[in-house]
Image (cartoon, rainbow, N blue to C red):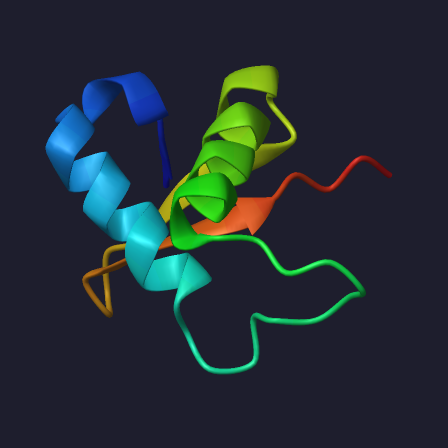
Length: 70
């Protein structure tokens, strides 16, 4: 189920994004970004529609994922 990012409390959304960007294996590339910068990047993707929040009812988990543009 898709959850609009605007339906989530801003503090909760920030914590969700922080959890995503601080997971092991999320640092790659030639430029290192701070957690604050990474949070802003993910938020921009949510706002632009490049990413979305999905909720799995069976597992009771939310995930932020890229939108499939195919």
